[in-house]
Amino acid sequence: MMKTDALEIARYYADWIDDSTLCKSIHTTRSYEFAMQLYMEFLETAKGVHSTSFSSSNDFSQKNIKEWLVWLKSVRRCTPESCNARLSSLKSFLKYLGGQNIKYRYLYLDSLNVGRLKEGKRKVEGMTEAAVKALMEESDVQTITGYRDVVFMAFIYGTAARIDEILSVKLSDLKLDTKDAYVTVYGKGNKLRTLYLPPKLVINMRKYIKKFHGVKPDMNNYLFFSRVKGSKAKISQEAMNKRLKIYAKAAHERCKDVPLNLHCHQFRRKVYPSAERWHEYRPTIQAVRACSTNYNDGLSGYNYRYASKSYDIVGR
Image (cartoon, rainbow, N blue to C red; front, side):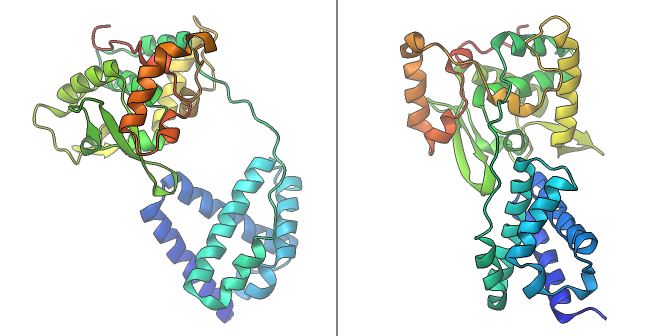
């Protein structure tokens, strides 16, 4: 027979995942689920604790959590970065658990004493101007999908936004008719961010919207979409990353700057202009600050030099 603790915590876990589905990205929710699966696997294989005999006071102890991190590194061969991500997910659940029922509050407070593992510095390979140009030239803009993909690449490169932020953009989030055009995105933690759009990108976005959404578009539709049974559905991160890897493989043959294992995050890492030329891009920075609710986020990873030279995609 299942213990009262185990049954109650299982119900809170289901509620936590349901809430995450509504408020967080699919990627975050999957990360939560996987972390908890790993914790239960640790308890069963290393501690001999079955899910039906679960005890909150013993099984979420600080000692167990620390041993779980060691288990993740030694048995599962997780990197310190992965271990820390799993730990954050577990703490997130314990925080939710304590918020729902005060008798579990101590579990979260106790878990705060478990420190993160030391991470090595990772160098994220950036994208040069030549690499982006080669990638864009691989997409066939004469096809519907190719045209959509090249506009997507220009959009992610021009804004330095995260992939899910862009794939979640709806037409109502775009403000193209203002002096300083911008887009509103929902970032990590469902935080609202406003990002400046370079002038040439704005021109291309207008052409794209007219072609894909018509002259009287439904403002509730996703900016970038795929057709599923006649409806305009949101594109998954996996699907877009898969398409980018196809372009990268072909583009790498003629431009070695293109990473073979390309992923969308690399569009956010760009080659910056040299210090002596920085004054040339100051007006662009001021424009970002004028229209951004959080211009430090808006500037993150931004390549002003390239943004000002954005491709005329349609004219290619």
